[in-house]
Amino acid sequence: MTYAPHGHGGSPHGYGTPQGHAPYPPHGQASHHYGYGAPYGHGGGGPEAPRRQDARFVVGLALTLLGCLAGLLLLLKVFVLDVPAAQRDAVLNSMTRASMLAYLPVALYLFVPYVVDRYDPEPWWALLGVFAWGALFATGFSAVFNTYGGQLVGELTADRATGELYSLAISAPVFEELFKGLAVLGMVVFLRREFDGVVDGIIYATFVAIGFAATENIIYYARADLAETVGNRSGALSQIFVLRGVLTPWLHPLFTSMTGLGFGLARENNEPWKKVVYPGLGYVVAVLLHSWWNGLPTITARIVGPTEGQLMQGLNLLIGLAMALTFFVIVVLLVRRKGQTIKKYLYDELLIGTISQEEFQLIGSWGGRLKARLSWRGKAGEDFVAAGARLALSKYHTARAMQGQKRTISADFIVPLRQELAHHRQRMMAQRGAHG
Image 1 (tube, rainbow, N blue to C red):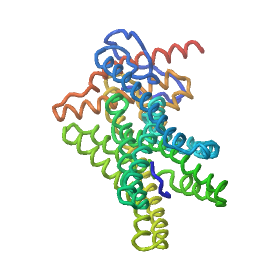
Image 2 (cartoon, rainbow, N blue to C red):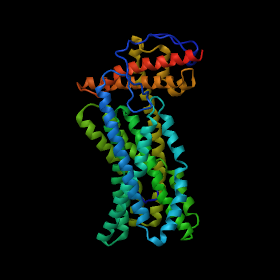
Image 3 (cartoon, rainbow, N blue to C red):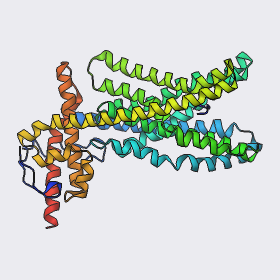
């Protein structure tokens, strides 16, 4: 963690009215219909791939829980147990107040990426998992490497300032981006079905980075609170809150999104070398951006002077804000591209009668799940839209794999997802009948 400042016509009544459809003939009765809200729900057919994915999910969940627990223990070690006993009560009181200030805005921060990706939004449990990973595992392990690594360099060079610079400009960028990036890698390995491309990579990276930044802010805010209560530095807490909580809450997501973008590009490509090179390049860019933000003002202050260092920090802030805004626009365009992909690969399902024209329009619309949930379709309609989007994206990955004469697990989910669509349609019709 860093310590720098920092085929059927649609109903004329639109989505709100049921209509006829040409059902797709099932390939076998499903044994379970979990829907989209549970990990790897499927409607039967080709069971081996879903079972393998279920097993991976269990392993990934276990590693996430163990990693978060280890990170929490390390945080307690570095920031509580290592504090002299005489100061511990004051530190704990400041951290309690800082925790409320750091985590209260988190809902607002998370709302932005969550609401942007509405064509095929990621499941809440997956987003919660990567958020917790960033808040606990990534911060805990980063704190160990940054704190003790900086102390070691300071002792070896007999210069405490050099140790602090190492921690800021080298250790923090390298290890923080590594530990945050492991969450995105985990999604690719253990929850591949929930990871479709660049948008998903960016969304997961953003959530893990916001979790990281929230916990990191506790440390910064607690130190500022101590500076006010013990050191009589009036306004220290408000200043750091404005800088980190208001002006730069998107810098950590921006850095880590480079790694997410790399994994997303690798997911959309089938050449083996790209699956290694793209994530590696994304990580390198994340480290360079992070190092630039943390180190440049400090290096400038040491080489030129304190005044120039403050000017560089102000320039850094302006550049960072411009980069965050530009990246947000790029994300919106990528989300739009994802919606177009869903429509493209869902169109032949319309032609063969798996879905109706109205259902095609609903699945391919921004916020289709919410539209379905608020209409007569209810929860069954929401699950229907989710399965339709997942079917289109599975076909997209299958088509790309076939172009490169490769095989992808996405192909094993196409038939089960068609069956899932039929199942959810039956639920919708039954629900409609029950309500007259």
